[in-house]
View 1 (cartoon, helix red, strand yellow):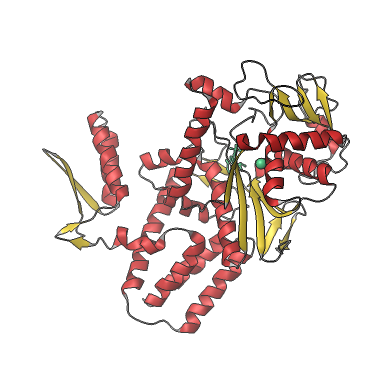
View 2 (cartoon, rainbow, N blue to C red; view 1 turned 90 degrees about the vertical axis):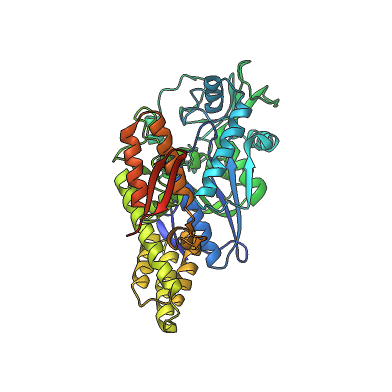
Length: 468
Ligand code: AMP
Ligand code: ZN
């Protein structure tokens, strides 16, 4: 299979370092708040990559970190610790904040059908490894102390900037004038920060009580679980110029050699054509989508329609189209399932071949989806249904569960109603009790669009499939 490697700026054939094992590190979330749909675009990409590797017969050895400490508000070394800030605002301890949002993250990952990497590792469980790493860098002469911490000396490290193509001079010129004038170079980054008394998460170290820099977390944990040299490292494109550049610097300074073969990055999700931000209130979470009547899987399907290296613009109209398309897809699939016709073996094989060619070409999932849609236009056949389920090993849309929402299994005269419709009905009740009749009406329309009719009675509502 071929993957675009940010390091070499070209598509390269993936060959594991050892046998058929794919060792892969994925930068995980900083758990100071709910992850937004942009973050999840990157984790859906990670999941697709893992599914394709698995489909191609590789044995996965994946690691993802949970950053539950030390990531400052800016990518430089200024600003408050994100965990500390969130804890202060919510009047909780940073540990409670991290625990709560880590659980929320996993719930959303599950809803999105994202298969978790084999190992999930928390930064706070690896402070010793980070201290050992920083000590080793110090011994090798790549780190120096200041009054507020220990910094990596990028000038000492010759290869800085190879991932983003930035040269040291530009990086230095572009760096903000830092408040810390003890740094030898404005672009030097913190390996360890000395903590003030007010800083709750802090640990003993050879440099005093403090906490690790963000970049050292990923270097220390990837080294521990995947070794000095592994196959793939993933993240979003925002990580290229600083976080991953710094990881490379740390890794190569420590071992004196290349640490990762493939650096693979997914492009950003935009919202209404722009950046997501708290102030614009458009940094939507999965719960926000659900509140508007969309499921996490519908969002996943929305993401699958764009290649991971292309920017993707999120709008609710786009999500609505994805929802409708997914519904039609499932309906069509149910008809194939119900058919007893056989499809010619060569037809199925030709579609499968086309599908596989797409997925191994740098994860061309939109093209692979096109193959699925084309295949579904064939004469109805259960063989087509089974081939679609094989393809769904990559898409992860739960197509095998299609009948629950489309066939409406009827027993004792009552149709079972999908949870997504029940959720909508409950939201509508809430809207009505808040006297928000406009919203209630909108939700009713969504329920109808999903093929159900809601009637209000003395004891609450009842839902029935609408007869077409
Ligand atoms: P963070 O928790 O900020 O480290 O982000 C978690 C992951 O989400 C990282 O891999 C980021 O690169 C990625 N990410 C952040 N914002 C977006 C976005 N708008 N679109 C896609 N990925 C994003
Ligand atoms: Zn990382």
